[in-house]
Image (cartoon, rainbow, N blue to C red; front, side):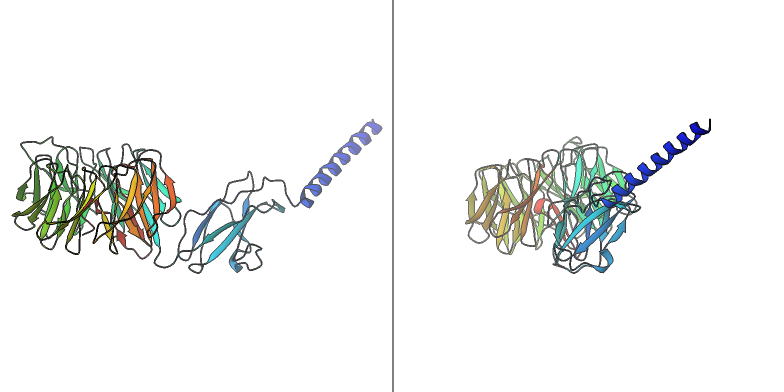
Length: 471
């Protein structure tokens, strides 16, 4: 019996020695008992910060994060040499603008550590660099992308396609969906503040004025919505004789009037307080174009192949200009010239006072995209799959660059780049001078009428021309 006990004790001692020896071996192996984590490309870059992220490696308790200004990490940041992080993402702060940094990590658990991850480089933004781009997709998601890199910052899933182009006012983002809702979001996080039910799909874009949002729905109604509560202040049927008419024209709000086109061949000016029509301007066909207001005039296209100019206050018709097909594109007015696209495959420039044609430039397909003008250049998309840059004075094509499908989306310009969505399910960034593709970001389905909205670090909001906001 004594011999048996001694044998069992000896066996237990050997097991303990083996276990200790095995642990000792593991601790002496600098590759550690974990899978080495993978540092991920940086998607969210700021002027003085960036968000570092990595793949979780397993049951580690945390990570040591190293940040430096050189690949050898001989010039580390004192606060990150290392910094202990429990999760798989963290914001690196206290950085200098326009400076390249490098980060890597180790997984740790007690005294055990993994090998270093790969090293990721990132350059912080300049103070005036663009920050975020917002766009909707027919995959029922609304997206926020980093304007410098194309990395996805966040997305919001709805219950319908998103054709609406967003707007931002007083730090809040608004857009509509075909799920019959107007959304109010935090533009930095994507958190929903409220949504308002409009009882009809929304394919138009919201317009902001004096604490209220104006939006048109597919069921022929125009809504005024309080931005604080999401309560509907009023809703009006644009034409009671045609209450079911669909609305594609987005409202433009200037000097107490809401301008919007209807399927009943009319341009309307509504009172912002009541929604009652102040005047109605007839055209020869449906008005899917969104009106632009400039210097006391309102301009809008019609499917009767004409561009119209009305006096903004009274609706008196001043002139019409002819193209060779329907005008669904929304006009943009800059320096006394009205720029608009037509289904006749052409981009036009008309004198804003007289309607006289200044030039016409052809593309290889219909133009539904609304032109954007910046520093003497007009940018517009075409059904021939290309984005065009055209001299604003002469109409000469400076460059054109192809995407994977037609472009109905309207471009927006900022920080030496042009951004536009394509039916090939991607958002693109082009070099403003050469048209070279800087990056593309994928969504889950086509980007059709939704156009990118740009929100800069300085808080500037840059709209495309789709809803007349650019005037």
